[in-house]
Length: 169
Image 1 (cartoon, rainbow, N blue to C red):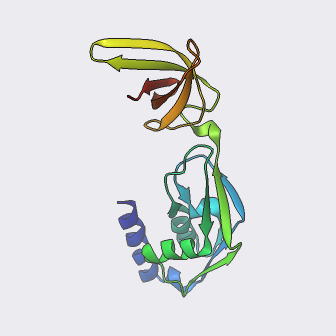
Image 2 (cartoon, rainbow, N blue to C red):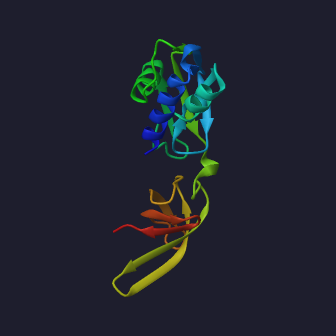
């Protein structure tokens, strides 16, 4: 749905004559983000017509970045994302670094590495709960490693919500 919205906006911009002015995408060499999706606004300095810059800023160039993870966004990936979104590369200039190394901050994770968590294990009607420490960061739905404090054993658990994980059997 987001791709359709971007495409409709691009067509509207072209029809209104905004595309007559060139837009410039200057790729940075490094960036940090707080969300799993990396947008062009996160990795580049944008200039050109205001309406075009607004659309360019929201264009997703990488998805699913885990907390603490990194991804490389190359000039070729940026150009491919622009083409896929319907931008005419004759009026969008991509300059700057050859690639941007993007890192997602750990602080945005539902469970951060080293954080205390409640560990729940359920088999049939039996449910057990204990304390643990997350050995890696994760968003809700992610599977992470956790050390159970009572046994000092490492288990694999799915993040249910901030501070709560459920053991995966």
